[in-house]
Structure formats: structure tokens, C-alpha cells
Image 1 (cartoon, helix red, strand yellow):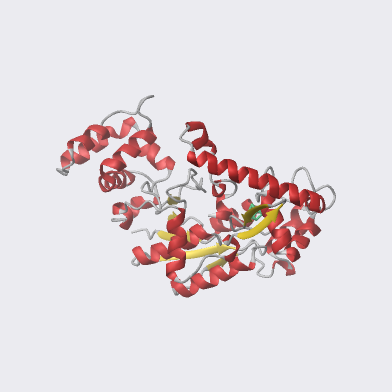
Image 2: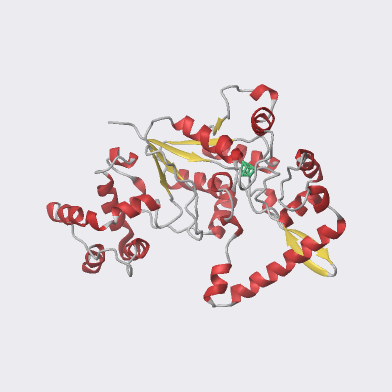
Amino acid sequence: MIKVRHLLGISGGKDSAALAIYMKNKYPDLDIEYYTTDTGKELDETYELISNLEIFLGKKIIKLTVTEDEENHGYDPFDYLLQLKYQYLPSTQARWCTQNLKLVPFEKFVGNDPVISYVGIRGDENREGYISRKPNIQSIFPFRTNIWSEDVITKALSNSTLPFYQKLITDNNISLESDFTEALFQPISLKFSVKKKMDFLLYLSTTSVNKLIFEYLKTTNYPLASESTFSLLENEDNLVKDDIFRILRESGVGVPKYYDKVPFEINGKKGEYSRSRSGCFFCFFQQKIEWVWLFEQHPDLFEKAKAYEKDGYNWNEHETLIELARPDRVARIKEDYLKKEEAKSNRKKSNKLLDILEDFDDDEIGCAACFI
Ligand code: SF4
């Protein structure tokens, strides 16, 4: 039988760290390989989190590198690519960093082996994360009641699979509740989308729908097709942000310090700021207030980020870090941030659909490969 590898990527963020803890506690029998892809530009707290995790897990987190050359010619992985290959800073339009520092080493590490990749997207998030286009890599989301990726659900619940389920249930004498069976055999239509159907089936019986999908997968080339059982079929958890912080604290691994809120005052108004995610200290996905946090809380790193800006290449589209760090600009950013936070808290009190839709979580922006 083909051996399926179980992998879990540690980005340095809270969610992937909590997922590693959760999997070890809840599914100790799964032989999971933990890996991290280091850019060389993370905050110290991230490296501290990874070493605490290694102690908790009792095994090494495999460090994937960008090149065969261990030393990257004396450069950090990010600098190696910047100096010797690209010569311009990455940006939201040209994200060579994620592609080369995260995705390429991961896919090389996997090779052609069938792989289950566990991803820490939470139950309160509205994103899918990194889905490999390589057919030998299958993503599973243990923090959500819906553990499957979109591509799996689309295929497993398509109208053309209904005869398969009919035969499976009859041949194996599977007993299901009548409302579950009714929903299962209701075809997908404009009114009854794949998502609606999946949510409804999960609500009626998470284990039943998971078991049926697992059987369906055996007729495909997905990695799970070669497994005789899968421990997560009975997983009904739905973990949200507070659960993640709880898991980190209770395990003793701890929450990275950059999540700690730091108080500030501007023109008589009080507020708090922090960094909202892991990733490179100069990441272009960070919000203006996070740049101000870096400037005030880690001035050495801010200076290093500044030193990268030259020849018209800046981390932010409309201003350089020299401009951003001017006292009047810092004050403006803080004021704008306080206004935004106030509007956000008002929206939370509102039941209007538009307000709910606008109240996105900052975690959901940007690069899932770097920040989970
Ligand atoms: S954290 Fe930001 S800068 Fe670093 S690799 Fe990811 S997207 Fe690029």
C-alpha cells in the first residue's frame, strides 16, 4: 500500500502553532511531519515560538530552505533571492517571496509523495488558504467543522455522484436519518448551492457526511483514497480565535509577544496597537498602524526595513518609510486607526447585513502561506 505522508506547516503564526498542539493532543496516533519555511526575516518572537513548539511536540520542526545551498551564499533566504535574482522588492502584485520562499520549498519537500496537508484556517474565517494545484497534495482543515477543501466538496456533492451514494448506501445497508437522506439526494441547483448543501448536511450529521465523502474519495486519485481509515471523520470541532489563544496558553507554548496590545495616546485619545500576524518584519501586507508599531516598538527593525527602500522600490505604494515615520504622519495614522476601530466596534453592535459583511478580520487579508 502507498504510504501517505501527513504534513503540517508552521508559519510562525498563532493558528498553525495551535494546530500543531491540537493535532498532537487530539490525534497522537497520526505520524505528522512538521516543517517551516524560514525567510530569515521573521521577528524574534516567531523563532521563539518555533523552539517552544519543538519542546512541546518532542520532535524537530524541519526547516526547509530556498536553495540546495545550506548557507545561501552567506545571505538570509530573502536577501539571497533579492540580491542574486530579483533585485526589486516584492509587493502584492509581484509576490516572488511567497512563491519562492514558501511554496517552492514545500512542493520540493513533498515531491511526488501523496500528502495530507493540515491547514490551520479557523472556523470563524472566510478563506480557503493555500490549495495546492498538485494532485498529490490534499488540504484538510481540522479547525473547521467542514474539514474538506472546496475542490473536494464540489466534486463529492455534484449531482453526478448521487448514483454512487445510492449504490453505496444500498449495498452496505447504511442507515441514515430520513432528513439527512433527503438533503443528500436533493440535487444542487441555483437555490441549493454546493455550500448550502454541505452546511446543511454538516448540521444534520457531520460524521455521516464525512464518512460518505471519504468513501467517495476512494474512487478518486486524492491522497486519502489510499488510506483505509481517517481519524478526522468524526471531528465536529469548530475553533475560533479565542480558542487558538487558549490552546497556546494552556499548552505552555505561549502566545507570541507581538500580539500583546501596547497602549498609546494621541491628541487626548487613547488606543492600543500590536502586530496582527507573523511573517517578515517588513511584510508589505502589514497595515499602516503596524508599521507605526514597528517604528515605535522595534526601531532597529524599522531601520532595517527602511534600508531596503531604494531606486523607487518601497514597501508601501504611496509613501516611503522615511515619509511614514514623520511625526505628523505617525499622528495621522494613529488617528485614522482609532476612527476605524471605533467604526468597527459600532458595526459590531449593528445587525445590518452590510455592516456584518464589512466587518472582515485582519487575519483574512494577505498571504495565507505566511500568516496562518
Ligand atoms: S511574510 Fe510578507 S514579505 Fe514575507 S514572504 Fe510572506 S508575503 Fe513575502
